[in-house]
Length: 259
Image (cartoon, rainbow, N blue to C red):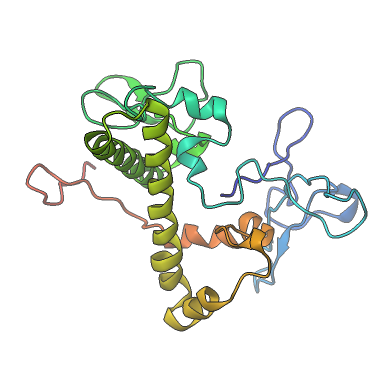
C-alpha cells in the first residue's frame, strides 16, 4: 500500500538536515532534498527534526506540476505486502500445491528468508545464538512483531480458504485454488480496513461520509490510497502502536517479563 523510496547520499550515508545538536543547519549546508521540521523551543534546543523528501516519480504526462512521490508498493488495498507486487515474487511464496502459500512446517508461521537477504530487522534468539527472519511480499515484514503477526494471520487465512475450496472443488488446479483463495483473502482485508479500521480512525460519522461518497470514475471503484496518504499521512499509525508488548504463557496469561 505504501513504500516510499528513501534517499541517501552517494556514499550510502543518510542525509542530515539538522546539526548534531538538533538545530537547523544554515541554508548553504542544506541538501536539496531537505525539508526539516522546525519548531520553537523556549530553551532553543532542540528545534529541528530531520526530514528528507522521498524520491520523485516521473509524471504520467511528463509535464511540470506538483511533485509525485515514487511508491515501491501498489496503491491498492491488494495485500501486496503478503503476496508481492510481481508474479515472480508471488511465485516464490507459493507451494504450487493445492493453492497454498509457503509456511514453516512445524508451527505454521511465515516461511524463513534465505541467508543472503538483509537481516537487519530480524529477531535475535539468544538461546540459539541466531536470528529468525521471515519472508513475505514486503521486505519490512520483520520490522515489528506486530507486522509479523498481521502477515501471519493473513497467510494462515489464505491457506485455510484454499483448503476449504479444495474440499468443495477437488477438480480445481493449483492455480484456480490459489487465485480464488487470494481474491477472498483480499476482500476480507479490504473490508477490515474500510469497514472497521477506518471507523476507528475517523469516527463513525466521518467514516460513513467517506463510504457514502460515490466514486468520480470507474477507476476509483477499487479501494486505493492517495499519494498524500501513502507518503505522509499514513505515518500517524506509528502513534497507534503500543509501547510495550507482552508475551502469553501456555495458560493464555501474561508471561512475566525478563529484565
